[in-house]
Length: 280
Image 1 (cartoon, one colour):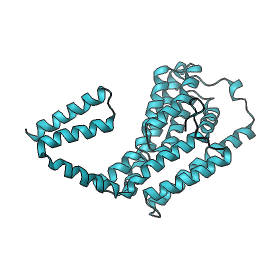
Image 2 (cartoon, one colour):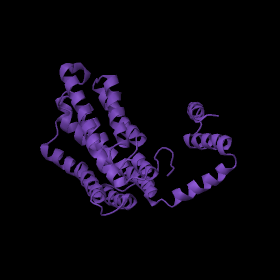
Image 3 (tube, one colour):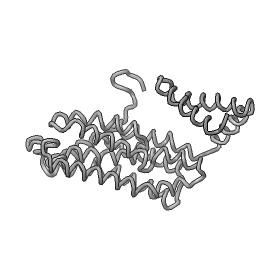
Image 4 (spheres, one colour):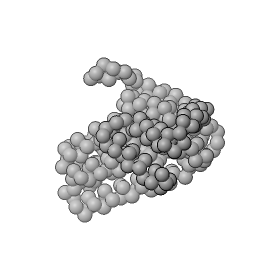
């Protein structure tokens, strides 16, 4: 079998397995195993063992569960909810303000989780009902959540970059540094699009009523200090330590989880038990 035909069949088998609902990890491993047996015979088992051993020695991949754990801290401590409420109050008075603040929240959340699914689910559950309640265009509201959530795979600490760097034998810190500007540029373009669209089509994103935004300025400043500044300082401190070479990715993940736990616990006790199911 020619290599080109084998690659084509691998992709077809991969998509068929995923569309049938099988777990992606098992589909990837099964496709690799089956086509490896056809190409290399039983030698593929030795290659599997060698590859697993190399991955187990790769300390950079320790950053993946640590960054995910940090995102859980941010959600369970209520930082994401306070950040959402604060930005919606600050920008809700302009046309498209809820959509703009949704993308801004997604950008900050992406810089703490490093994945797409967690950002889209968390932000979507908070932002979509609020935007639909204020008669936002449904397609634009869903697009703002999906586009903002997708920034989690680009803005550091992206889990994809943590995995891709060792495979490509590239520095994870340099990859992080190279993705900051494109990620922030995309976030800015998303917000500019929402603002321009709502300026030209006011019915797509009407401003929040004055009664909902009638909160004393002192309280708004307090909400801003307790919701935006702590995660912002945390992001700059940890990413700065990677960019300037003070610590590697997995060590920065450890520091980040520790600081996120401390800052979240100061605001309220962190509960890992699901109130609906009772599970941790």
